[in-house]
Length: 119
Image (cartoon, rainbow, N blue to C red):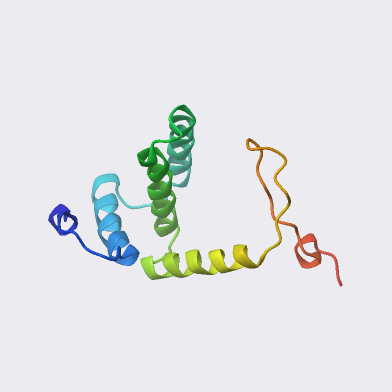
C-alpha cells in the first residue's frame, strides 16, 4: 500500500487516496463506526493545532480523521468527494457575516428556509 504513495502523482487523486486510507484504517483499527473515538481524537488534535497553528501536519490530522469518520458512517470515497464539492458550491453561494474578530467563528447568514420561516 505505502509503495503506491511513494510514487509522485500529479494531480492528487482524493478518491484513490481514500481507497488506500480506508483499507489501511480498517486493517489497523477494525471495522465499525468508531464515531466517539474519532471525535475524541479530533478534539485532541484541535489542542495540538492550538499549540502549533502553523504546522500543516496537525491540520491534516483533523482532515484525515474527519474523512475516516465519513467512510465509517457509510459513505464511499466517491460520495465523500461529491459531498465536499457540493458543500464548497453551497458555501460559495452563501452570504456570510462580517468577521467580528480573528478568534471568533464567522457563520453564514441563515435564509428563511434554514430558519424554518416560510417566505
